[in-house]
Length: 310
Image 1 (cartoon, rainbow, N blue to C red):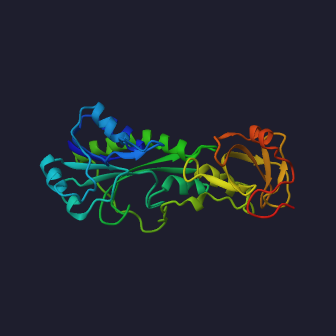
Image 2 (image 1 turned 180 degrees about the vertical axis):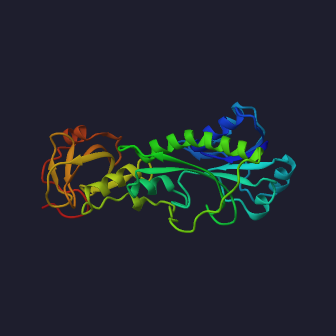
Image 3 (image 1 turned 90 degrees about the horizontal axis):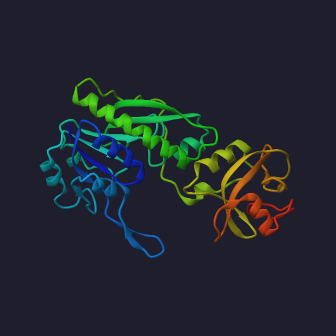
């Protein structure tokens, strides 16, 4: 089967590489333009571009999928299907081009967690399982007919970044199997159930703020889900303190108050305590919590958050 692949970030790279190694033919890769990045603001190519170049694949980098000439280029590619992984929303005229439709990989068990940040919101919610879905794109965001689904267990201490890497690798196989099934006409799309749909909207920095009046488990899930983006944080000494990792702690007290600093930083929550194990003071690199305690003279009784110390 002839395919056009559309994707940009690292999440899409394993799928592109798996399709290159499969029986299917990638006739064109479409990805975002190079963007300024880093302190020097030098142009940086997206990961999918680098993977496509390594594989010697034809490549286009339009400013948008609506750019002049894009529809004509996609028609000329004469692909049987488009494979879309972490890319822009496709307009109606582009969706109509491939005879078998446009296959999208979504890192959730649709219709759960439709939207831009399904992995993060699943961890925020404390889910023990998530999954991968391939489906046919239509004009409804993440609402098209399902092709294949695979359930994936979430590990107890797994962060969003770690889960994303694992799902990207597992998703590559799901996409290849989806293409195999469509090519042999052994895979039939099925409408998504209307019940159990949930949303996973785009994240803002505020989604990483920790509310110490919440339960230990809710806070721990927030830290795992916000790692690496948008980043969980609290306030300390009038500055932002990022929290990268934490475990369940022992003790009770006024919420946000530091209960112990002998092994990490144990902070009182709404129903117990949370032990911070990796933190990042404003303007400094991330570090073990014990190093932060020693270097910044953190003591029992200080309060984290925007409330006054007791």
